[in-house]
Length: 116
Length: 116
Image (cartoon, each protein chain N blue to C red):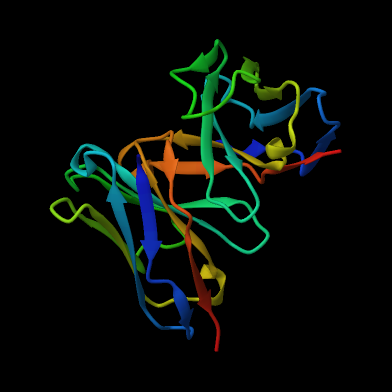
């Protein structure tokens, strides 16, 4: 099954842009990854799914146009432009793998985004 | 509006049992797969279990297999997680989430604390 790796922290100034990275383990370059936003004390919120061709399907409800994704090789990126205070959150990436008795869902460790 | 409301968490001794519930509203519950995902204090997300819309397919993480049982009652728009033989490492906020991955809606979670 894939392993997803995320840097533990990132920061960006108000109004700036930031790109968060989720890296798949070797051999899983064709996998799609899901991004979730989790504000402090809240449940996760689906942002969007990304493959090597970019976004897969639709964004989650209420996700602004400032959020976009890109996929390249083993990396899946979430870019946030014109960062707002409400974007300060933990961002998790996840991927489902296998079928039947081998089905699993794996998550990265999450990246805590601080808005300066 | 899609709503998922978890309940049933609390303090339980090691080896004890607990049953979590998730009340769903705002969508046709019987048409969607459902999931439980947990988050230990200060940690990332961990997938626990998934169940298909008609309960035909059920999957568990290795960490809970044989101890936890997922079920649903489509007539009551409810999802359940029966947790037996609880361990300290099961301490977490438990979220229910809708969808066949990605999970597009999540609840606010219910805290389970396993401690003597």
